[in-house]
Length: 308
Image (cartoon, rainbow, N blue to C red; front, side, top):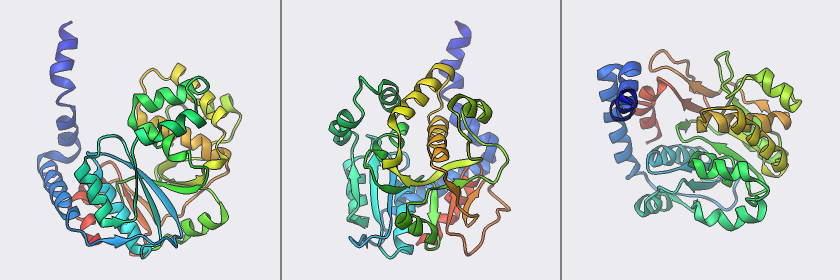
């Protein structure tokens, strides 16, 4: 009982503080917080970009009140390098405020904002609860799984993007894939693949060859190619065997299985993933940079300013 109380009233509430102190130190954490405030303020003053109906690419984001400013900067940087010729869908996790929605509409003119409630009729039609209980359970248990479900009910080719990225050059490979239907994923530079169960176990269970080191920061494929019955089986399997569900990791695992079955290929290293706050390998030719782990400090204190 005492242990549970200590966890509830001390360890759990202080987890974010302890995490940031451990990985960034006190001064790094202060810089991170200050950079985040500056980025939010700058997001309010971005010059509007009109998205053209003559789009060369379609992209979708999931976002909410915690990440709205990151999504705006990523989508804005993409629209900028594509001179507005991109269709952008913003899926709300249910927490976007009316003010934040208005900001998206004013900065990215022509953007589509989709609320969770707006998807319910389509969900009931395409993924009825009686037939897809595991998928629907995951969607209701965490907004994060709307990246897997809501975003992919459209039956067309689109690029799924994380918010903590910035575009610096025209994404020629993605535009070509949009026209040809080729499947791509962002590939980690580190050796391990981050899935909820070992790759070998997944491969043996589902009779497939997993692509290695899939990072779901960018996933480009045709939603019409998804076998939802198979995905339901996959979700049920993981729910029965993974004791603690970590939504981002499980979503990445399920999407990794989907794109592996579609014979997806890794994007080249100009679709760059950064892991550290210093000594990152970057190039002026980078198409996009994805900032994870300690690279969040580099992202929040310096990188976003290049978009202005």
